[in-house]
Image (cartoon, rainbow, N blue to C red; front, side, top):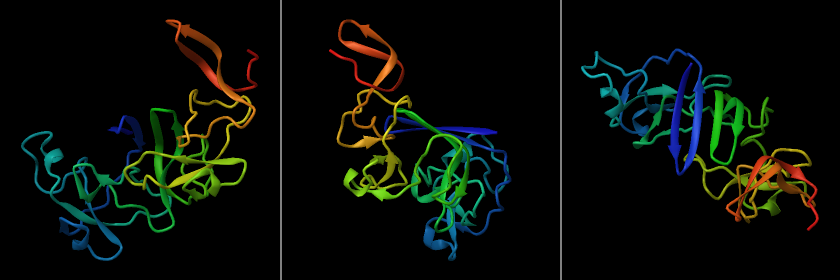
Length: 224
């Protein structure tokens, strides 16, 4: 199992990739237009092509070229981040999934600072996961685009346009939540539904100003 940690705009994204055989490299390329239809140009720092490297980390600095590979098929391992962060002309590790599929972990854990994809694979967007719901759902630009029991949630990600979110359900009673989500733009999850508030099962007052919420869940508001 190879774990890859990426820091992006203050958000920590952790991807747990299973041991997998990287597809054989094809023709060398520097841009996507160098590859035939159905393939893309991929830079793969974990499996460098060519002769033995003189230095252990030399392959990580070679972001000026890649090799043509085919698009990933359903259930095949994929890379959620997409493009090489050092060269937007290249994809990293794998080509994107084929049309109609999205790269998502079989299990996805989300918090206010971290998204963890375990065993990311190309999947149909409507597939349900074994943990929290993630990117799947109707696309939206505001809450008005979603049904009454949903809000429009945005996930900071280099692969997705900032003005596109996904409809998710409002958090229900006793569901875990993130305190202080009272903004017009919802990030990572919806707030608690109307009539509930996100509050820890224990609330600690720090310095007379900051409340630390322990195990926050959606609850009926307290009086006073």
